[in-house]
Image 1 (cartoon, helix red, strand yellow):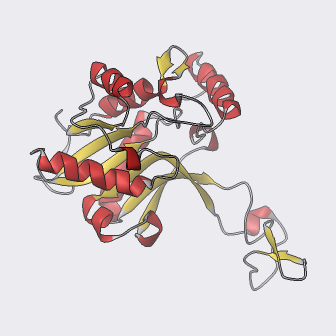
Image 2 (cartoon, rainbow, N blue to C red; image 1 turned 60 degrees about the vertical axis):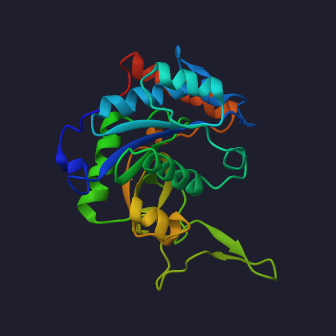
Length: 250
């Protein structure tokens, strides 16, 4: 795939990879990645968005599951390997999945990789523009990682508390002057896995995203919903239905 602008690469020679990771197992929603959402499996929706963004040199699927691999290939993804079992468990570290993907691609002669942008299959309400903004912001800010996020409903400076050893609740992050209303509190954000854009250098220099210099692509709450349960699936189904009917912005 041809990247439509050099602004979506760190350098002319370093490739930008779109990754759709889809393991076979899922406890909350069994076989989630193949679950049909308004006529399309979740993995297909993610792959279609990756291609539509027109910023990736390669769109790759990392999976341990032959059926997932076949569906991904039919929808334009490269699947040059099957992920090993130890990277496809419930407790597997996805950072290690990304490392494995980069190592395998480069070992197969893909070329030097500069950025991996993971599109989580469960975050089906992100937009193509969200993808483009995330990668662009990663490059423009010089950050190690750019993650989608939304403004949190609760705030540790204002209405989030923790219990001390005596069972007394106190504000998690007490400000110098008590905050009387939500509008006075510093903005805080919940991370969403909708898009996780990572510099290759940071991926192998650090062991976790929290150790990186991170920037955010802030998106509305309704585009950040991640499917982990049947209730999540029904919510996303409803919200996507509104969008497809023209009752919500794309």
